[in-house]
Length: 255
Image (tube, rainbow, N blue to C red; front, side, top):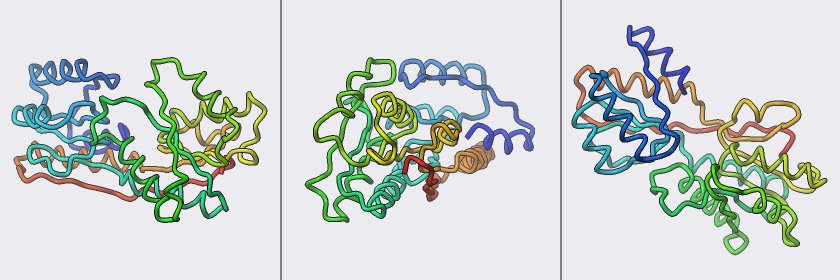
């Protein structure tokens, strides 16, 4: 995403300043306030944990485009997303096409997550694809704590359960890759014993030793589109734009 943004802003003569919010709302708010104080021309927020009226309030002070955060009713800022619901459906349909029916989902457990976040959208896509296949009653979701909380025991219990699923759709490669690693550690064969599909098509997923099938949301394109939208905002556009692009499934050995 950053590379896509930079390819547009550099050509337009803009410099980029990066702030890391670490998925913590207070940190993100402080960063935005500091950037407003520093008279930045505009902001692109990626996977922000800020939502609703707070974003609208900041957007009244500075042009904003949000990536990886679904709020299509927003009026003060733009959104650029891949269709997370569709991406999850692509993953589940592909597993169904391989003959799997016992397909579980692994996602995040955080009651503070806003419905605009990507994880709830991906869970909805999983459930919709299972329902589409007549497997509503077989849908089951395992929720992991945030990455800074202990999770190894939960993953191990998931993989060693007597009713372990035959296939898993994981909300993100961030958790799908540790899941593959844990499976190998336990002596499970991927995909012979358990098939795994992730989301985001991270560079690590493509390593031969990992070989994780994953949904690609075309980060460079998301970055370019968000930068073009921001420059348009900076140029005076006030009508909101909400851009949604289709993801694709990259098939690898874990599938």
